[in-house]
Image (cartoon, rainbow over all chains, first blue to last red; front, side):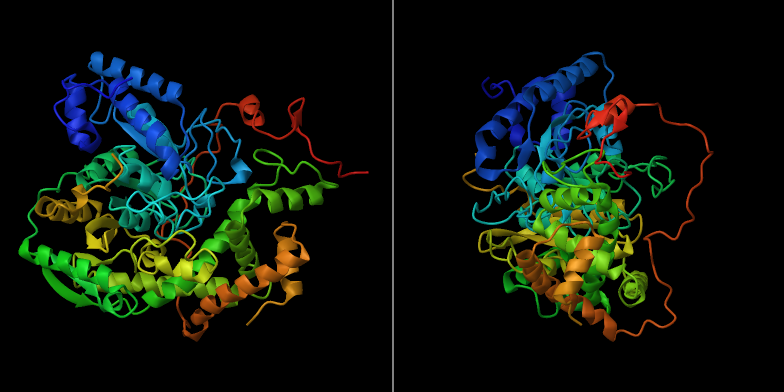
Length: 496
Length: 95
């Protein structure tokens, strides 16, 4: 089918969620037409980007027809009929849900994650498919996927970031208006930065983890990845909320995360952690971040220097805590109840050993081994408890900083998107690309990435960090910045 | 600190991941690189600091001990590698 005809009032692949919502409500476009438009783009462009691992046209079109029926019946909400891409970490009933792993290559989820139920079942959004990711969300480049590396739409020889790299590439290439992601150490913010998108990791506990395949449970948090703060606010409105099926879900009244978008920034105190502006960040990234600071000053914000003296310990502490939790969480993949089982084995122990050796990729095995070691007898206090004490110091640094400022600002990543293969042989170099994002997960705070310029033709992401439950404030700052700048509207050339 | 090859093999066994000699050797080098990074923590005096296990200092929520889910055994077993008569099949463990 051809792309929707000239009766459409706008360029649908660049339309905001609000514009799509209005066009759907006014019946200027149907959900089936919109969904077809994006599915056709996926057919055409995904072979070179590899952003989606599973697409099911019939299933998507059926959901779109159901959304159109809801709209025709007048029973719809602001997101009904709008297509989205789901990170393949969210279980979706009847959809293959792989988490980027051979272990789950043929796993068809028998139930919906709460995020899927809320976005698709309740809000009436239409899934375009499941996006590629680093295996079990362990990675910063998307090269750790069993389904192959994702290409950055801005430069096809570069990584899109990770672990939510497929979601980032899908939205950047206009294969989807918006996507879900998850962030354990930067996995929403870092790919958003590298693909020129806006992404939000909410306060830990705001978005349900039920049905979101576990990596490090005390850090994992789902959130939106889109082209603007406004789009992210609208998606978060439908994603967030208390869920009794997640024991760490927070019982809080529902919020409208878009409520403060237009609030003026006069009087806003922006904290600049001196540790984020020291050596270690590429000059091009820093220049773009400095440009964003000047822009925010023009909008009435004042800058204050703050300090996060323990932030350099966030990567070491994270690579104890996250692997420890992962080694426990991933013990469930035993070849018995679901997922891969080795074709040949002797006794039960041999079945476990071969299944896990063949089903997991190299990085996942490394993290399981690190985790098993730091939790083992004789090492628990020196590593695991020490990491948890440092986690407290890192969280306390933020508490002190937020006495001086309303939001914290810095780069999202120390470089723009690096080349495919550039860091894949050195795990530690790869880990350091999350040096500015990890502390936020350890503290459980909300953090955002948004585009603030380019370095050598590649997008640079600004990071904004808020106090607990300050999502609306972060979105407000990001939205005002985006009203005054057009970095977020740039799109990669050659992806038309 | 650095891990010996035997330690690498022992933790691989603890984690139930089969590992050959060549893979163990490559893994040893990578794990030691990671532990070198982790060692930075040891320079920090954390005496008297309460370990932080979780982002929110909240008590675990309790609920009534009542059945809340329906029985979906058939759907859940449909994704299992091998089942028979409602049971998961594994190699024989009792002789």
